[in-house]
Amino acid sequence: MRLPSITPRLLEAGLLTKPRRAILVDYFKSNWLDLSTVLSCLLASFMIYLFANPLMSREFPLYAGIDQTDFWIKHGKHLRREYISTLVSAVVSFGVPASIILLCGILKVRNFQDTHNALMGLLYSLSASSLFQSVLKWTIGGLRPYFMAVCRPPMSLTSEGQILTWYDAQICTGDMKEVREAQMSFPSGHSVAAFAGFGLVALYLNAKFGIFAPRPLNERVPFWQLGMVAFPVLAACVIAGSKVRDGWHHPEDVVAGSLIGSVFAYMAFKSAYPAVRREEKVG
Image 1 (cartoon, one colour):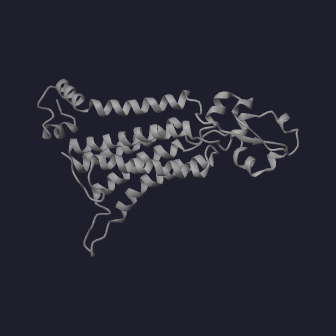
Image 2 (tube, rainbow, N blue to C red):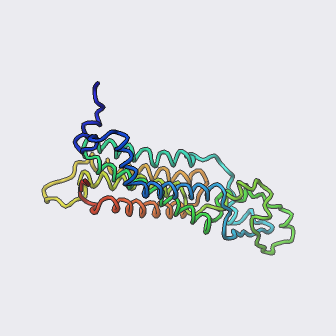
């Protein structure tokens, strides 16, 4: 029987000296705490996303003529379908970077522990940043660009002239699930996930190919390698920018989310590799 292509790598690493079941048992004994923490972060983030009501009150003004003001321009857009859904964003932000790491691990790195560390770094980045942004949405949040469209406040409250009065979501007459979602604009979760996943793989590719590593003055980096690192950044920018174009986030939500994702990508990468600018093989 012909062995799968990955098997020789495992033999070289000494991982197939035991029965496969024993290998799995040893693996989970060594990594159960990390895996449990990752799953706990993802579960907590998912529960906040599904069930948590905004912790701090989001108030908004309502008075006659408000539909002619800057506030209405910012928060009165109509609700549109997302260009990139939350599920697609999550799958792409993990699946594409993981595939790149695996491909690079098989073709270039050829070291099981090194590739494992990179994949664990990816999980660290996505799970920790996911919980971080979920807590911010729950506590800080903010009104989405389409908030007034789903809130549908009773316009009879504007009959008192130009007197400025502030209200919260309790006066909304729209679907309360949509109203709850419309109060969690800051930061953009798509942006966080995109830069946490694609940002980490950009750092990984840079380190493995030494693109920004110190080099002799007469030596230059091939342009295709620069493009290889730029691709993940472009992908993250497209995902993040789509949230402004589809009217689900304000620009500041996207900028903040991108910065948060980038910070977690850097921290997670540093947890797997001490250096960022040059290749270091773990194991």
